[in-house]
Length: 231
Length: 336
Image: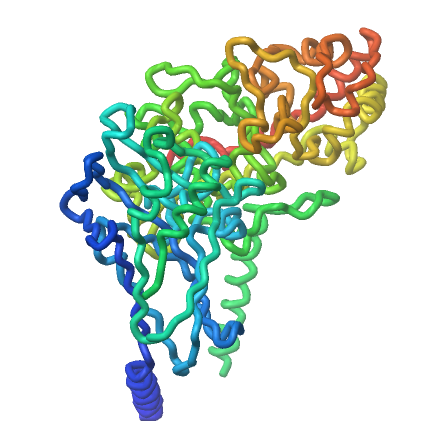
């Protein structure tokens, strides 16, 4: 009988906890890969632009990590184990929900484009960081922070392909990009990744393959970081 | 009340027995430094080590299911590829480097001859995906393991999850490799005052301390660093070692300093396996050093050894052979 009452108390307490969790404010962070005004959805097919160079986007995958919420420049909330692989061909990866349990007020969001060096030297990891996700170099340790692949008439390569695998965690080629944005709507945060901002700022005729940590990868990572904005 | 006491006693007994097994799987030999591997992220358990051992010997890791880790790292040759200067992969494809001997890996920070791999867990990815070695992908290996009759159960036993992941696969292989500790050579017995060197070995030990120990210090017999030891560059391989990883000209021609433990069995020697005999290695250090900007400081001045002294050094090096490691049944092909 005593045991039964203990079980009853446990069930009661946990259901109260469950109900209170329901009232926590959930923050929705959505990510939209775009090309200018058009949404880039690679779930079923490649994305074709109507520009004169027949630009085609086949792959867009990137890591965003270490979500930190700030108020007046001070860190007030951070997501634990905050590593998100965003894949323009997988709609599941385009929305992230973070619970703001104490309804903390903030006015700024900081995060990284890529995976930091401490995480990179910490051995095998699971979830979005599992090496089976295809975003880990095998011949030289390190995550690929961003993959952008496609075709353009400008590229005099095989099948007019371009392939950017941007990564590198060690100085002087640490390609991690720290980003910060002011936030007004704290319930729905909308991140846009505009590929057009990358393509317009590089010359695909001369730059079409980056596959290892080097200075070109570093410069291109800076360009890619400018494709990200929050509305 | 009595029953409860008996129960507690049983628990204590089980816990202490458990700790005893854990200790024997991985241990830090007396006088050895603290391991570099972070065990808090991958605590050693018997079921994980056993899984890792099975994976180490399973050709499922190669594209055509013909070669395993053990193909190029066989136990009786200190877990390296004996008789092959450059290790070969599936379909007899020849690689570009000599496979390193595997032992005392918990005390190493960077892996591969050029240190391209930053953690023991991630090391296996390199040979798995190298087209000249296993020519496979970790993603496909995981799906093959998942489809196998045995592995989902073994992963469940080891990690509490029958869904196989890259993380668990790599961590299991690390667990087995971490248990490959060689600390029981005759040299170790002498240090523990359980045996004595012969006069010749004693002289060899003295000469080793004078001439070799700055890069190959006791007790691990490696400083775990990258050095240029003055080898002339092979014109066909054009391998500049660590330069390829860091792009730093100061790292040109630097390769990882290997341990001297079990060196009697880990031939051929050097990153490209160019020397078959220890006598050739010593000849290189006394008369073959090629000067260059990045040559190790300690090799700037030539090492002078008489032919008798070379013989004595080799006699000492043979005392680093650890038969209990080379023939330890816990490290061999899992037959059950």
